[in-house]
Image (cartoon, rainbow over all chains, first blue to last red; front, side, top):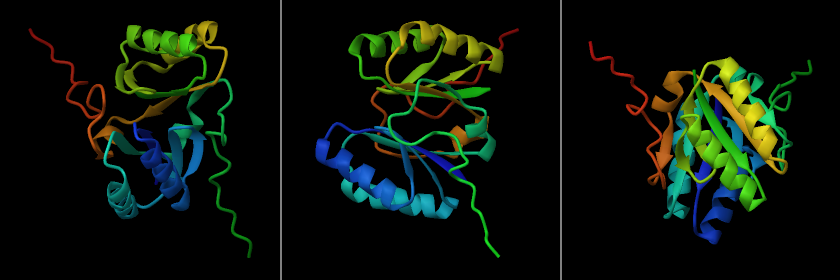
Length: 95
Length: 95
């Protein structure tokens, strides 16, 4: 399942910590406050629990979306970090 | 169709204009750079076109999600503006 993570955190330290945690959990940064990652639902709840230990101010939302949501997304300009759309999320199995 | 609008815009004037346009198109502000709205796909393309006339820097993404994506979302803290989850999006018809 693909998750969109978007946060609005006032505290600089907490914001940096949230970004680090999300990326440590395999989320890719697309914008400063917007990340995309792939996790089973249960693991997303674990992630939120980890974030809750460090983020005391502001708001974090983890939103599950179907794979094709990103394919159908409309964009203006280029993201400051990684591209929004796959193929970054295609897992290639070499046998 | 529900759309998530998330932007990362450096220019203060453009950012304020983007927020104003999104809200004029019925999007609800959840976080400073994150809005949620309901539009048919064709209208979302029109919206992006209008935004492109004003936003020359940064990145805007409009991501279509199924209605239950918001219901299944996980949240930490309270959003600084409007709540993320419906019922705000339930249209009640009085006959």
